[in-house]
Length: 263
Figure 1 (cartoon, rainbow, N blue to C red):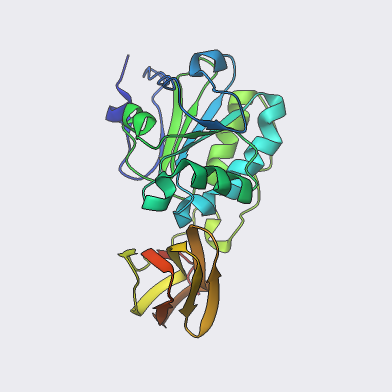
Figure 2 (cartoon, rainbow, N blue to C red):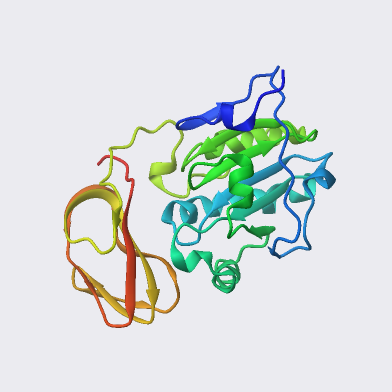
């Protein structure tokens, strides 16, 4: 049964593709800029599982999934897994190729990254958010998909299944709120531009650009490159009040809130 990729997009969470569904990987458009590798062709990846994740270096949820992507590349590339990060910028500084290349180096990403500044791959996938994760099998048929943070152990066990590996112990949770099956309290919604006022979350971040300083609840934070900066981090879900001052030479594109485990 052939099914369009967009018809399978889940509203949230993980979706295992039905066994009788045939959804094949879109090809990467030609002449796109790549980092860490010569341009890849998806059809030449046949014979190995391929994990594709859409990300943005300015989005904190992309940064929070990154340790798992890097660990899976380190663990399973030798066994045949191909990890590809598709960088599609949602904030102005993330649409600049030089900024993306600098971020890949700064974040010590070693697996292939394709820069999708014009949303070509995004549109081919019908992708709807960051991070968006797609696992393709050795025939380049869609095996599973997931939107957002989480499902790390589940994804790693699916990778092991496709590689024929038994007894795999998934990467331990990087943060307490990453534990499988944990129900998290809802955090405050992200806010465009700088935000000051009450919030509830496990952490507060800001998307910043320029050169200068911001001050969050009395703590000065130096801004040296475009990206997502942690302002406040708590050991668990916390009710607080954010006092944020943006210094000269700095632009704040958004204030973002991350989940935390209940106390």
